[in-house]
Amino acid sequence: MFSNVESEIYLIFLSATALLAVLNPFGNLTQFLAMSDGLPLDFRQRLFRVILYTSCAIVLAFLFSGSFFMKYVFRVELDDLRIAGGLILVIMSAKNLLFSAKMAVQDFSHYQEMNTQELLSRSLIPMAFPMLVGPGTLTTIVVMSEEAGLGIATGAVGFSFVFLFILFHFSATIERVVGKLILHVFARICQVFIMAMGVKMVLVGLKGFFNL
Image (cartoon, rainbow, N blue to C red):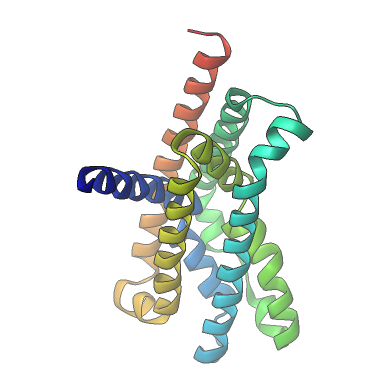
């Protein structure tokens, strides 16, 4: 009994690690900090909570409905989704790696001119979707639920967003202690793993598609 529990916890941990890599928390954190620069700390934390709650709701909604849409609405197989999702991850990570210098100096000053209501509306689009949760994340969570099971995938989502909540809650302290440069380095490392995950998804999908 305990060995089964331990194996499930281990699977949840592995799945959460993969999901966190796709969510790229360090890369998104640097952009969110730049967008909210100059805002009072309490409002910045409120903004981050809205982003996380919205993102978590999107992921959970897609987790519980994605398989239904895949099988009965769009009528695609899991291997088709693996290939499509893998290609999305490879393209997005390659773009972020090749143009990361340009993204690092991106101007977010117009966000500081917005009022509270405008910032909260922007926390839904584009901050929650598609910046934090994009097509690659949604594809990954459906593939994960089909491969590991709905319970494991749900646990991975819960673990991932608890980590994100802690990270974003202490974002000001982390930025002050670690620095933006180190966060940027972590973000680029995550992009490498995202690309590797995308390649693996494509290869597994191709093997299943051609029955290799």
